[in-house]
Image (cartoon, helix red, strand yellow):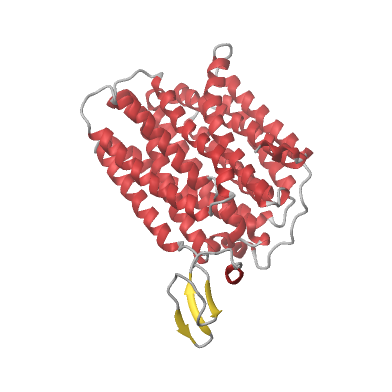
Length: 439
């Protein structure tokens, strides 16, 4: 899998992604401490609003960026986004009002909504071979998972020697390093802008998701993943501290189990996807999410017992594995479904629509867990996952097996065949004989 790093341009882009993710992780920790400094006991409300603003920025800004990306040099676009994020990170330590936090978070996340789809669209052009691109997708998944484990640990180490405000300096340095790496990467030239106005180009990606069956199914799969990841992100602390009565230190262990499951699948998938279609992996991952929700319901409904903690870790690891099965091949699917000139718009639409799903499931997971109990939250989000998975299967039908109409009447074959005007018709998988060498 590491062989793709021999490509200099991709190596620099991947390094830019990694250092930007680390900077974002440090900012997440520092933002929580800043919110507590400003709002005290209301810090949770401030952070919840900030996360909602983040999702709104992602949903609203990404399609607009997709419309403009074809008319702008990708390197300049990503560089501008990184410099904007670095500037906002340097401003955050100086705020002393909640509204200032909201404004700066919106600008910061708008810049991220510009950077990420442009980055995702340029990688398949830097790595045109699907074999290499598949491995790049797995490496990207690993980078996200490792960041979720590494950044909090790095923040804890830094906080032992500096104040939390200094973490924002680390964030700015991460974005500046990302900008430098983007500048040093050799990127393909910008493709000619698609015909039509900016509004039409902004809608092009969303239109692809409405018209291409596989992308319609991907939208349903996004909802299934959002329901599962929202359950983990929002309610891990509730399960660990309230449901199981464990100390605070057990929270990162549970989140680490989710990351470990995701990383394991990301390491295995490149070889698997060489032999198995994307649809098979993604649909089975969504089906596994439903099974895991059932297991979580059993753990949630159980009484006492020391077995519940290892069971929760296993459930969280299975959630991570199933989510990775759906998310990792997504780039391959979009690359095949969208024409090259519409690829940035398609990635922007995926970025926007997937975060729209999280905008729905995050507050649902939190509100139901707090107001009605964890059991109702599991039932509701599990039902959403099941419905979304079944919808994806219906929308994204398996390709039909090959059919022949040119076989002679006496041709021996175990499969049923019926007579038609041109000969004999039957369907089957590809067979390695003279008549069946090609589907």
